[in-house]
Length: 163
Image (tube, rainbow, N blue to C red; front, side):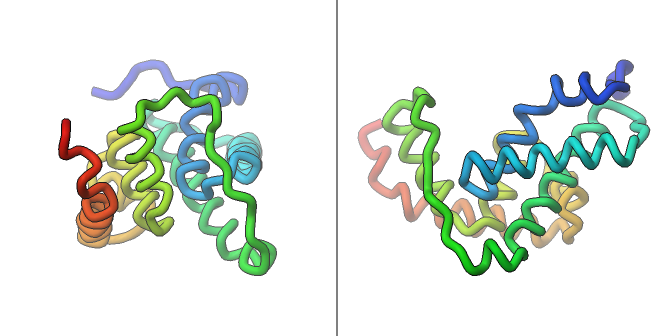
C-alpha cells in the first residue's frame, strides 16, 4: 500500500523534494549553478501544472521525470553545445578517500550512465521504474547499468585492493 499523506502545497513539495531534485540534476549536469537552475524550473513546472498524485511515490517519480527531461533539454540547448562550463565539486562534502574515488569515477561517466547509476543506487529505483521515469525500454536501462558498472570497475581497479 502506498503512503497515505501526499503533499498538496508547493511549499510542502519544495521542502520534501528540494534535495532530491537538486541531487538528481547535479548528478546529470555536474555543475551546481546549472543544477540549481534546473531544480528551480522543475518546481516552477509543478506550480504551473498543478498535478494531482495518487501517492508520494508517484509524486517523487513525477518530479524526477521532469528533472531528467529538463536535464536532457539542457544538454540539447544551443548554448550548452557551444560552451564549456566550469567543472566543480562540492568542496564541503566530507567524503572518505575511497568515497571520493567512487564519486569522481561516477562523475567521469557519460551522462546517460550517470543518470541510471544515480536513480538505481542513490534513489533506490528498480530498473523497471527507471525505464518508466526515463521513458526507455527496461533492457536499455539494464544495458546501461551493466556498461556503467564495467566502466566503474575499470576506473576503480586497484583502488580498493587493500580494503
